[in-house]
Image 1: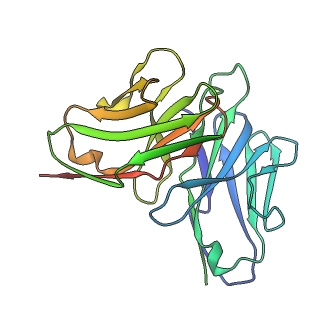
Image 2: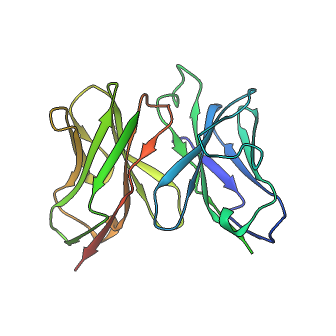
Length: 119
Length: 113
């Protein structure tokens, strides 16, 4: 099956610093990647949708200047949390879907998640 | 707009008993429906999906779900629970299989001896 990885799996940082999270499709080309965040014991909330080579589309209420998303290649998308604060502490999960008509187009594949703790 | 309601944030069953996790959806267009499982500190794994073909969908690990348009429901069932089924389960709706997902609030399944 299609595999999506995330790095790092967990990160602790000081308030005010920036943190970059990588999402990679290991064995397929991902034209679309989604970024979700999940607070403890809560559901996943979509933050943004990114298509390779174009600007991300952010959901209402998500600050695009705070959560920078880059999808520069068909196998890599990054989420940068700028000037992180304790309220940004969360579990961030990405998912990816492949090229239209390809074997992994018809489904989203999820990464294992990244736990961010901001002190 | 689409939404999903999962009834029961926590369900407890005995090992070997029937598992029933409820999901109702709202969608202005024909929906695509999904059930995912999440183990602690992990991402989501797809159990099964409804894509407008057969209304009874069979998934992995013995789970299945039935799409009932008249009831706007997509409940997840498993005839016999196993200890390894203990996890968080999410129902989700989308306008397409590779489109953004709207998740329910999740149901934590506990399996007891």
